[in-house]
Length: 145
Image 1 (cartoon, rainbow, N blue to C red):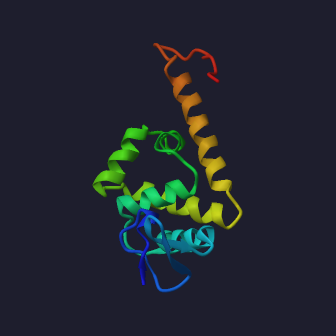
Image 2 (cartoon, rainbow, N blue to C red; image 1 turned 135 degrees about the horizontal axis):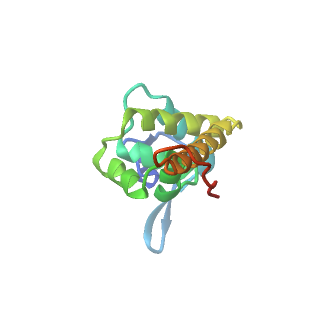
């Protein structure tokens, strides 16, 4: 068995699909089809019944190709908030569910959830900007890009 720490997850063990090789620098492990392995790990993590750990949240985020800042922007928070969740294992349930859904939808080929959320966030920001223009009476506000 090989303890696959390269995933960033502490609990992934491979029973096969790898070869141990001797190199001039010592022992090395070659993994067969790493992309497929990460897909299987990601789907298992996204579908597990318990809440995501910080490491699992980070794994899914990275598999989606999102930085902490870019995910934060999508959900309307700072990248620092994402960093804190990943470090402390305290991920709000709604964000746990959102990332799982985003991951599963993206990996099954229909990533409409991400664009829908981004559109809603954009609309929310525009409405917020218009609401900021209310001073005793409603006045048409400028739309921000």
